[in-house]
Structure formats: structure tokens, C-alpha cells
Length: 362
Image 1 (cartoon, helix red, strand yellow):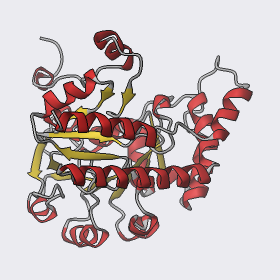
Image 2 (cartoon, rainbow, N blue to C red):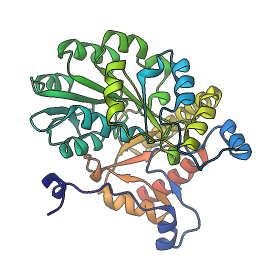
Image 3 (tube, rainbow, N blue to C red):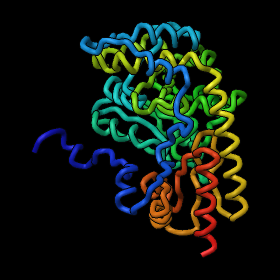
Image 4 (tube, rainbow, N blue to C red):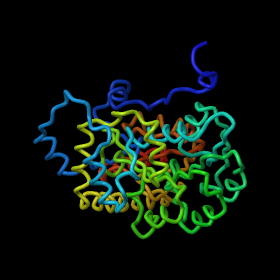
């Protein structure tokens, strides 16, 4: 047998059907993908302009330090450049954290269900995974997570807003939690959807990092920036933790092209705010529609809703697939009888409402 024994118990990430596959299987001309929480508005005009004017030599290795992007982002965030760690998406940084801090004999604490890659990579490193069921409202059970921490706990994972519920951990609850746990336990705040959160509800991250030096914040260019295909994410932490993560990071893990595109994306704050407001407007409209047909959902601070379905989620997902909508069944996310639906454009969601009405009126 090849590889670590744990690999026989795990499976590779299984992506959903791609647009081309759905078109061919169901003989459809138009497909609306609402499964992966991408930005339906694409990316900034500044990025599009860069694509038109690109003049870059790809024969050479990229800057492994991502110096230009690093300094631009550090200035934007008001942090030191060495507090940043870049990865091929924040997913890769999750692997860095597990590799740097977890090993046989250690344990890690997380909610259940939550983003599955925390568990996946912790198990690969041989750590014990302690999963604490979420509360009935989908929120992290911070009290019982704190009780699960012991002398062998090295990493705690908090996803806020959470995937797949969209719930936001209130900052006051987070602070109270942090005050109860040892300073040598790394606490990961996965904030992939940070920019979708109302500015008044966002964590004051500079204050948080100063007060709690064991915190690592994860963010990404894959969501609101609309650059999922380029795979760039980053961590913000104190320099000591960042140095450890950079030791396990590969030397050229982000490309020259993706670094430059992200630099352009950072220049367009108007696009980010416009996208956030559009998403909020369309999401609230969809929530009102769900209220009108009697379907429940979890309160969301993201660009998706976890919707409670009146019938089997897999059957419902298949029904929508046949009508040209790719969504994610909650069966695979730990929430049976739910669908995770990305908030699309107004036009996309209007068409989805029509299909859902057809289903409820059958």
C-alpha cells in the first residue's frame, strides 16, 4: 500500500457538474451556475483593462515573495508586509497551517459542519480532529469548542461568515471566546467572505491582531474580487506565525500573472462596494421570495443562502439541474434537506424564482 494509512479513509475533493457537462446531459442552451459562491458580476474594469494591455514575460519564475502585491496589500491593510502569507487560494494556506502546527499527538478543534478542508488536511497530518456540532441556528458552539481545548490543542478553526450557513460569529462572542483559551493555541479566522459583510459588522482586524497575537486571518481574491480562476488567497497574522507558514510554503506558489491581476483588483474599491450592495439587494429580494413560499433559510452575511427545502435536497438539486441551475445539495455539506444557493444577478434569480414556483405549484 502506498501513502499514509489515513489516505485510504479520505477521498479527493469532488467537484460538482461543470456547465458543459450539464448542457450535454440535459440538452440545455443556458446554464446558471449558483453552486460555488463565485461573483456573478465578474471582476473589476481595471482588471479587464490589464488583460487588454498585458505585457509580461512568463519564461521566468514568479517572485516567490510576491513583493509588489505584498507591499500594495500591506499598505491597504495598514500591516507590515511580513505579516502576510500568500497561497494558491486560501485553501492552500489551510494546508500550510496544518503542516506547520499539527502532527500525531496533537489535536485541532472545529465546528461540525463547517468548511471541510480543515478536517481533511488535519487528518492527513495525523492530528486528532475534535468536531463540535453547531447550534440549531447554525452558529458555532463556542462554549463547547472552548471546553474541547486541552494541552495538546494546537489549532482552532472559526469560519466567519461560515460556509455553508453564511452565519457571522458576533465580535463580542469571538472576543469572549479568545479570552478563555491559551495564548499558544493558533486560532484561524477564515474570512473568505469578509468583503460581503456589512462594514458595520466586520471585525476590527487591526485591533484583533494586536489584542490576540495567536490569531490568523484568512482571506481570498476568489469571492468578491471575482478571481477564483487565478487562485490567490492570503493570511494576515503576527510575523512569528507568518514566518512559520512561509517555511512550509512552496517557493513559487503564486504566478506572476495572478500577482499582477490581484494588484489591479486592489485598486478598485468602487467595484467591491458596488458588488457588495448589489449582492445584498438581490439576496434580500430572494429571502423575501422564500418567505412568501414558506421556505426557511439560515441568515446570511455572504453571497449565498443555505435554503431549507420541503423535499429531499438531492432530488431538488437534480430538478434545478434539469432546468439549467447548478446549486449545491446540503447532503454533501452536513445539512440534509438544504440547498446552498449562490446569489446570482437579478436576472438569474428572477429565473430561479420562476422555476421554484413551478416546483411548488406542481
